[in-house]
Image 1 (cartoon, rainbow, N blue to C red):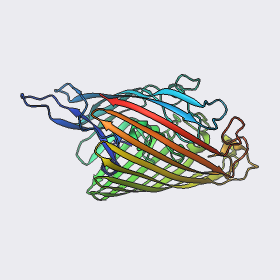
Image 2: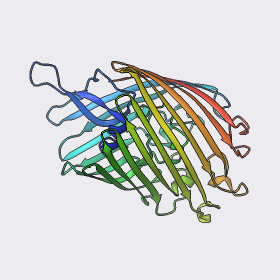
Image 3: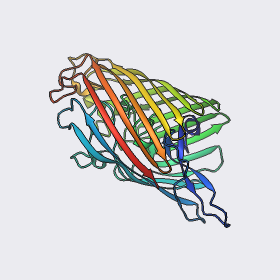
Image 4: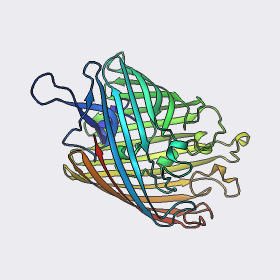
Length: 393
């Protein structure tokens, strides 16, 4: 989800990278707020990063470089007790004014998320190989008026309050509910603002399936400067047998929706939300039984000082289904399983630099043996610690 498309959510819970425009007179350059990428509210910078600006065409270039180290208990088969990786080495090229605009995000990235194996980029089946390649987001935007625009290309999802990349979220790792949502889709999106209401509607390939048979949308109401309410939903209108890391069979053939409330004051952010998804039975593509997930979460952040804050996330997700059915319909840790997680993330920012840490625990109930944590898949809990540091340039 981007600030260009969803300014209501941006104002409620995230801040943008800032750039510096080329000055025409001797005084210091003016600060320009760039709409992309969205940075989580904790990653605010009192010293805007340097920006390359062509002046004539208004094209800006920014970047973010960060790395992480991770340690965990009960790693699943093929995973490790510890890992070190570059969580982001990306540049962001954009033109955000005028009739014709564009956004390009390119480089290396990791997508750490709770409750699943951490995929190191050097491993077989790495992020670049099976997710969204070295150009994860790129689209052209036509904005004939201030209230209406159309985008086409590789678009960030409209679904859920958590974004795909580490720096876009209050916590380093995405949560259990994020695992059910889309991340990037190829397609077309229309955006319309009517006073305090923002409407987004997209025709796309769902979970990056390369089959254009899905629709998604979001309705965001900015009630006042500190309160925002959003309803979003997506559904597959066809059936697709693709089954990869980026395009899981069950989720790609599902319908999903979220109801998200956001409160954002000068120091405090609260974001409770509910999520529901449903997968219909279709034996032709291997879905032998209908199943669903229902879940809720709350994300919070408190800024103690301009440079230090503490974020927290608590979430619960449960699934339906009978264990006798084939596991291909499994949305979590076996049919009928449920899970709970808690994550704490302190963050410190100085000038263009940041450092933060995750401390998280996931607990499974009604586990199907072989689908849980540990080398044998029988563990019902996992603790994980992550330390991330980076610079915006």
